[in-house]
Image (cartoon, rainbow, N blue to C red; front, top):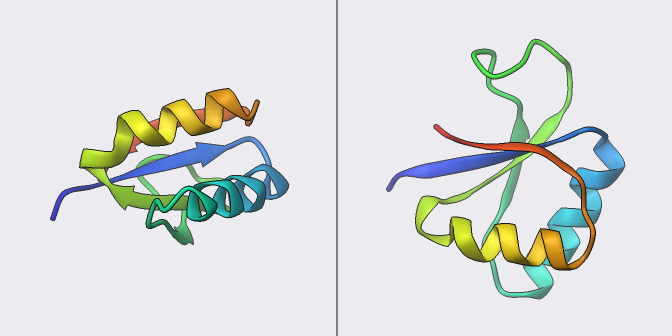
Length: 72
């Protein structure tokens, strides 16, 4: 199954996004940020790539600032 990750500027934004996405029936899993994407310590949210449009829509609608979405 192909996955993507969404990166955030802060851990608090990642936690808020996790709650919002799960509340909208999107299966997400918090994971450490892959090294090839960032050397910063922190978490990102992994989700099925097929749900990318829904993830973007929910986060934009709720005003969650993201750093980017990347395939993994």
